[in-house]
Amino acid sequence: MILRQKDIDLNYQRFLQLGYIRNDYYILNPCKILGFYKIFSKVRYESPLYLPVEGEEFKITEIKLKDQSFIHFIEIDKSKVLYDSLDLKFKGKKFKIISKMIFNYFI
Image (tube, rainbow, N blue to C red; front, side):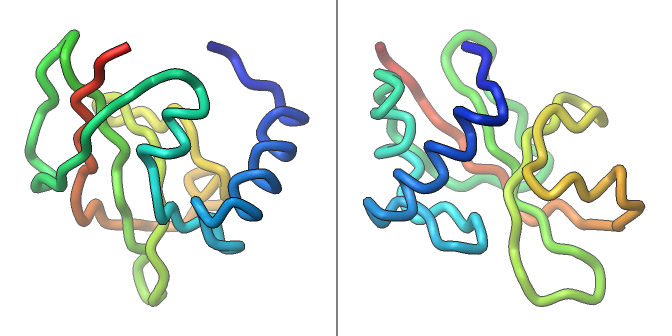
């Protein structure tokens, strides 16, 4: 599934109104968001070192910016940032991985 910026903006508003996220992009109900895309899952938290089981699990990484108090979620594959709504790496912001939300999915 490929999302364009227009799709992301539209769904941000939709999920905000439904109460699935906060206005600062903090995800309150990730399983409801995934269910919107027909991806049904269970979620649990794991340590930053945990590696998902390929083909059965996927992860969203929870990070904290150095010298900041807010939490943000990004998608990382090894050391490469695949998705970051705030584009922190491009802006030169340093962050620490706090945990990973691991999703077991079934379609």
